[in-house]
Image (cartoon, rainbow over all chains, first blue to last red):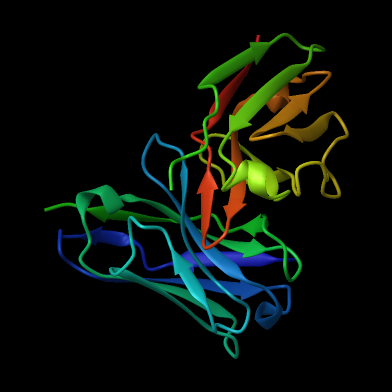
Length: 120
Length: 109
């Protein structure tokens, strides 16, 4: 059974940093691209970043480019999101999501999310 | 990276059909056959309902179907059931970017 378990969320002051983790199990982690998707309170879904299965390429939404860094540890089956220079508008539930088969462009499994609150 | 355009809400009675539209541009929806749809119940993680415009994952009822014409994709739910009441989001590949729709709240009357 595929499982994705996010952790690392919490309350942080504007300008601060936070590192999210997503522990994956139930599938061959190194074979699939992974993404982070966020949802501000009461708002819609927003794609944040994607990393290829090897970790060789990563792409970001303009809203986080230069502040967030996605990475992965294939030996430990864990996805990360390093978030720096956090702003109030980064407040959201952050989901990690597994992509479908290689070369696919959809998410077939999602974690339950971790809440990040940026506030003084 | 503008969000895809969805109606904010749609509604229908049990047994009826509803269609949710998702309008983008030739750089996203119109340029690729990589539109997917997600159902989200309150407080829950999204669930994949349709991928690659028309394909249905195992376990998703065949009451759910997808289509696309030009820059607009659509999700049709036939034989509405109470448990279909949820938020629905479209999502499209757009080269280096990916983009979601703003979401549509489906109310089953």
